[in-house]
Image 1 (cartoon, rainbow, N blue to C red):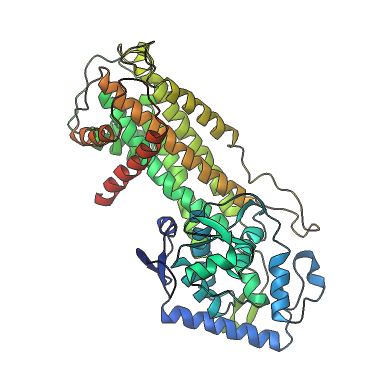
Image 2 (tube, rainbow, N blue to C red):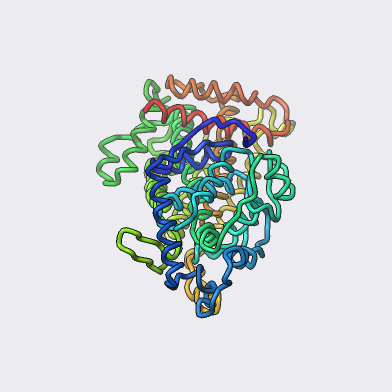
Length: 503
């Protein structure tokens, strides 16, 4: 039996959601209903019948890419080798195991649609793998996202066959050893199985889905921290007016205003702030709401990717059709990831500017500079702000869109490419960097109360503040805050997830 006990389960008959991808970080049980298994088997039989009749099928009877004009290898095992091995040329850092495992889950859902012609043993193998702590070792660089994620998915297949490297319980080791430790047999493939495993955008969809899942939380965290800042400073609340924001005409802006108002219920302004606050407070509904629109669009796109079929060719037994086309071309996800990337950078800009406001005594009604209890003797948030500045600069540099960087390759067979994989990886990077900007802002708000700002008046905000304060003691004397940033980032994820759970 495979090593590891599943903490969660999903079924291949249901829709795959971005949040499901996060569950694949740990052992995950995937249920395969009988009707899904039947459609996989029916499509497989059709492929075998068609190839046995002499019908030409890309990748089964032919070479790959621009070599489609030449015959492939006659034996299935040899054709499988051809499919996978020439793509084992990736490089760069390895994908985190959570991303690699999420990609396997995404590929499994595509194959289970019964249009790829894979054998049931391939689907069963992916299911068994997800139920363990095994993860393929997949280099980050190598995919242009045009003929699917050929190279990263080839590394998935390579590892499942016992070749190359893999991770088990977080340790990198030869793939054969990792399979043995996980209690998994080596996967045997024929040419169609191998091509179906690699010829899709499942790595792109997985990375974008994980980015979306975190971005959804980031939007709510930005609302929480903006409300907390409003309360701690005693700002007026007119900028959250329902009528004001409805008049603007953007539903997500109105939704953000409503969320901030909910956090602020029971709070009262101090009456000591300016009539109009800086934009980093006053325009938070418009900024965060607009980011929410981009996040929602990316979520819609990635849901379609996760529950569609990315492969070539596709097989339709009911009409006796084998259709060759471009359902591995990741343009929708490329555009969506780039748009998400920009939205995440602007949320980072907001958090950095809010932090800058808090540490500036000229804009906080006299709180000490850098929120230090003894300026000069201790520096409190000074290092946090410098780190935030560096982080925002890194996010901005990575904000250039990948989806317009098309370069011809593959003997001009792939003469236009979307680079969706790189766009999705960047979006995931940005979502993770944003967590630390939000954590730095939360620590600053906690410290602001310690050095003289008022405790939140709104009951929900007071409860959230107490959770943050429990995690991070006040800065009385300078101390390292690097590990505190990680703890607070995790706590903020939990806080907004709890709120979403009761909505």
